[in-house]
Length: 585
Ligand SMILES: Nc1ncnc2c1ncn2[C@@H]1O[C@H](COP(=O)(O)OP(=O)(O)OP(=O)(O)O)[C@@H](O)[C@H]1O
Ligand SMILES: [Mg+2]
Image 1 (cartoon, rainbow, N blue to C red):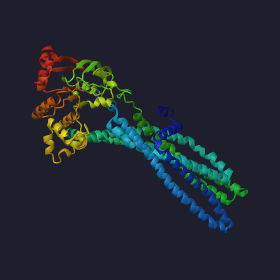
Image 2 (spheres, protein in one colour):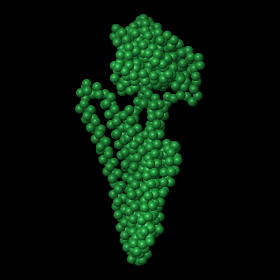
Image 3 (cartoon, rainbow, N blue to C red):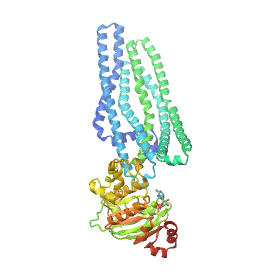
């Protein structure tokens, strides 16, 4: 990709596609072979036309009736073979190009799904979507054109050139001298198109991100009367796309006239030279007609090859954007040789853990902590003090910038990430459900859960009753991100889902913040029962939880400033006291 950015020449673009086809088109080798053979047949049939014309004209000229009867049959044969091979070749090329795109799509999805949380926040959702749809479509066009033009049109031109030499070498020389005149302008046009294309795709991406944000924030837009403002923003984004498109059209449209003018020049000079040669008796009218028809037939493949560079450059710009994702390295991955916790006890230690999101400010500083097996730990702290960040470190949604975290003496980075995450259930602050039924959402935690287990988990999470009352019960669809349910209902399902996972470590990030008092009490007592034998870390906002806690960690500006029971903390720490009195009373 870097080579492509730096050199920016047509050859490196070509290499880029070559690499692309080799890398993503492995399964298509057989189709590729067949398509190319068919294309060679098409090229051969097309190249024979001028020779047939030559014979036809001479037959008419010489009133040779036998030849005149035979030639139409030859023409029918040529067109039949060409038509059939052309059809199958187009289908095969379509299969290859679409299969390459499908493979890239799947790899792209796999890559993004494995992105760690920080990497994901680098890209906006809408921008990622536009890469899937828009960039890949442009790339598909480019690959299709490349596969078609490079073999079929290139060999058609070579074949036609051979026919021309057969008909008259001097006329061919005129053509060979004149046509290369258009190479430089075409390369220049291609380069400019690529530059504009990259900008256009970025603009489309920005518009995509804007649209997806708008559609998911309709309630905010309406409640703040932002419709007009959003419309103006949309207008600006669409205008940007329009302007870039027009710039590209202006550049791209220069190719055809360039070829037209050069073609005119070629035909004119051929007519002059041919006139002289017919007069001198070197060629006959048949050869001349054949030659002119060869030139006319050559216009289409020559044009296709001429515009190919521009299309390839446009696809190249999309490929750069796709490679930007495909080449991103995911940092949070399983080690090559992972360790296993054989006899799980659940002792957790944090040694000198720091974490920074942006390499400027540490969101967590010097965290040193031991958590005993089956301990029930409660975390308290003001907004932005680092509580959620701390919890996210445990299932490795993020990794410490410094320091280490161990479970039973093993660094969590040496565990297989799937093993690690399967022993932890995290109910995060922003509950997101998938656009599936309640049952399907619950089963995400445990595909093999029986209905009995599911109902039991839902009873602990106080959700069984409300689910049963729904018209379709467990088969109710929850809507996009679960938005057809209330905030509290979503939270209850998320808690049930965590219970169903049967975790060894349960992490609750303000998991009961949206619940009414009655439900909250019920769930907390249910959870206490359920979590007797597991470690639980709860970020709490509720006085009763805090008062009952055996050990509270108090977070302040990314640090654990003190720990102990509520009574100890309130006597020891002024900040804690101040915050407790202002927030929790
Ligand atoms: N994705 C992110 N990128 C950059 N900074 C972030 C990101 N997420 C959190 N932060 C910053 O890290 C700090 C700690 O955030 P964190 O979410 O851990 O706080 P919290 O204690 O959970 O707060 P709250 O009580 O509001 O949930 C904050 O200053 C926040 O601005
Ligand atoms: Mg938080």
